[in-house]
Image 1 (tube, rainbow, N blue to C red):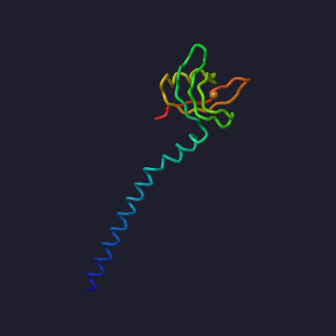
Image 2 (cartoon, rainbow, N blue to C red):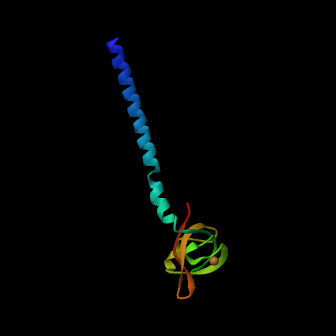
Length: 114
Ligand SMILES: [Cu+2]
C-alpha cells in the first residue's frame, strides 16, 4: 500500500514537471512577440506604390497616422534618409513612421512587414 502511494506520487510529480516544461517552451515561443509589438504600436501600415530614389521620395497608400492626424490616403512622402528607399519596393506591405519636417511630410522609419 505504501509503495503504491509512492508510485502515484512520483507519477504526479513527473506529470507536473512535464507540464511545466511544456509551459516554459510555450512561453519561450511567445517571448519575441512583446518586443516586436512595442515598436510596431507607434507605426502605421502602408503599401508602397512607388519608390523614387533619385528624388528621395516614396508614394504610400497608408493607413491612419495618429501623430500627424492624417487619415488613410495615397500620397508622396520625403524619405528622411535616401538609404531607406533601398529596403522597400513598389508592392511591399510596410510599417512606417512619419512626421512633418520643414513643412514636408517625411517618412522617418520604414520596414517591410513580414
Ligand atoms: Cu497621407
